[in-house]
Length: 341
Image (cartoon, rainbow, N blue to C red):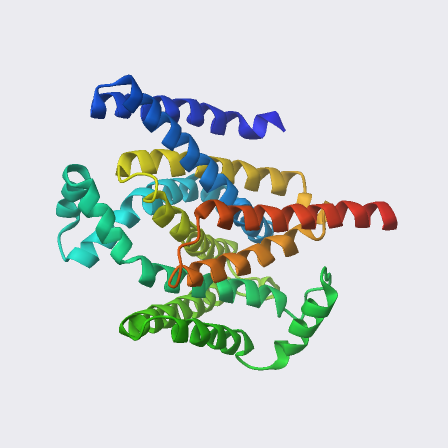
């Protein structure tokens, strides 16, 4: 197991050293150095705790991905995840919110971190609605799959699977939940929430449609490379959705964009390592309820993201919910293996 985490450990050491250096150059004091070092560590732990389910969802998709595209996702994909979502995405948010150029947004991030943080927080409602909707549809699609053969919490999962014959059931269920949260939000923000949630629905179905186009049924002897491209793009969008909450939550700890990128980037390296380990050791087959726990965690995270529109929920709670669900699923899998051999 050690070799899976060799590079994440190296990146952690380098990242924390760089965090300390930024703290020293920014404040010129030992206290600043230690403060930045601590924040970088907390951000990395936060990203790891929020990303257990991300690694499991990735591994589930990567099991059926073409080998060439699997390697590309684990190399290029991690670069997109670290630099795209942890650096470029916050810059783009400010670009759209403040209607300035990307270079001006970067200047604001460096010279006026408090103003930059305020702009990010102003976009929090839209991001939470969009990301929460996408993740909710992702979880509901898993549980309503009529080809799913294993059930963990049988009353819930069997009922949802019976609904697979109802056209658009996942979207309808998501709309009901979205409607409930919309009624809880002050009227001045309801249209913004609904518009962003609607974009989340469109994005999910667009990605699903793109996946079907680029990932045709292998029985038709379609191009494996095309199939790999579809899965690659699908996973990148899922990774982006998982990252929304962590990126926004990071601004509760610091407004320094470089420190955020370092801390969350360290966490992303561990997600990659966990994904590879799950695939190579065939962990999802050995612990058959682990995948279920991940998707319950995804659904819970979507509810947490919606709830952010009403009340602030500390990111440590969101991470704890996900880790707890996966831990319970792991225990249930081990117990089932002992009983049924």
